[in-house]
Amino acid sequence: ELKVEQNPLFLSMQEGKNYTIYCNYSTTSDRLYWYRQDPGKSLESLFVLLSNGAVKQEGRLMASLDTKARLSTLHITAAVHDLSATYFCAVNRDDKIIFGKGTRLHILP
Amino acid sequence: DTEVTQTPKHLVMGMTNKKSLKCEQHMGHRAMYWYKQKAKKPPELMFVYSYEKLSINESVPSRFSPECPNSSLLNLHLHALQPEDSALYLCASRRREEGDTEAFFGQGTRLTVV
Image (cartoon, rainbow over all chains, first blue to last red; front, top):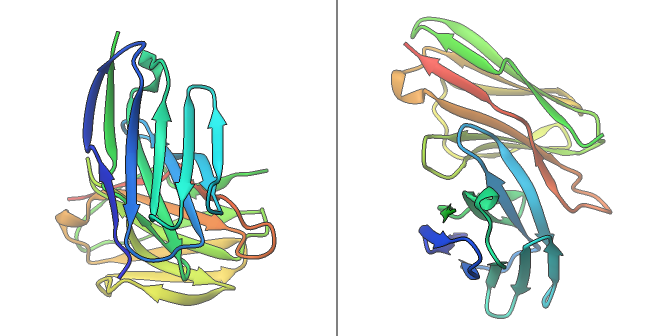
């Protein structure tokens, strides 16, 4: 059974700091997604990672994938208040896209 | 066009009502999904359609009935729901063929069962 674990589940941090969210998954997968969700809204696609060693960056967010360790990270550089949201990783296997529990990120101005 | 359109955006229904949620995409995606999301929880997979055929049913109660009339359209028929079924219902799609990368989500239907 495919399981996806994220940590931390809640993160409160100061503006300007760096931090990393971790996503572990239990079985092999052919792609890993990162999404952002604002309160009351739908899911916004941030990154799709397809292969071992893949790294993608957009602004202050950078995602990486280690398929051997079944681990993805989402790194936040010099956080700003606008990045406050819930971040989900999700893993695809055999047409199932299964989500981690999410990381609620609160950035203090 | 990278849009998945869901209607209605909000729905209030009684426990004896029958209603339907609609999801549409015109990106040529051949996999379409229904998810249920409760507040402060992750999206929970309900159904997957692949090439217009139901490929995954995550043991969803029969009061939820999915339908995929064509490759662009996905419906979720609702009947005799319970208050605990109140949630945000999300539709998603992905290409599932060469060039398959992102899975796109619609804006969701916020359902309240009274």
